[in-house]
Length: 317
Image (cartoon, rainbow, N blue to C red):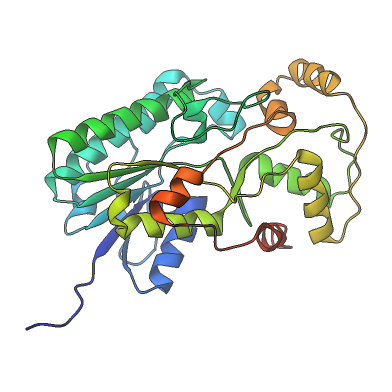
């Protein structure tokens, strides 16, 4: 009888991105065999390059012999460039590219596909409402969220007609050292000691540290109860924007400078400079109830928020 453990190969799409990089490092450090998948050229060992993502992407060379694929690649909504992209671009990459990946993964015999979706599939705010949970009705707002929702539906359809297992993960804002987008800009403003007009904000927002998200993805790779499920995840510690700023400032050894500006004035200012969505993400609430996730997978975030925020505010930002 052969007692040797069969090593399973994990493909990570978007391996050059914020989540993908950390995920590849974590998997390799824990002894997994990893195949990083990139759009463009890269010197990463064992990497496979697939070119631009869309409905014609040739994924099969990256999926041969793969047991599990974790799909982190896609067009994000966090950059100013992305905010000007037409709806068709989001659909081509996030919907078309994901559909093509699922079809090719099933053909190649991939056992499980884990898809990084977004809490935005359920809406962009819980202000005045209960936190989103696993029973919340999807209400995607904007091309990014719509493209993710359509991709989710397509993946579940592929799962029903093939033997491939699908797991969908809907995280809120993912933060960490070198995180892109609004979080990085907020850290930079705090580091520069600039006054911020959020002293009167009383919102609550769920976040998830990159360390905790990656730990959850690793859990989803093997847990038998994950197959066919959609999960909401967070750090299990919601913060108001002033609390977040104060914690980050403390981690940097800075004094937080919070001005008592009424929320409506902040919203008006956001509209005037064309950044209403960014402003709402700082002054509105968006909470996640992940009790269903914890009960199903017996998972809790391994890293406490005090540690993850301190690491996120690191000096090499």
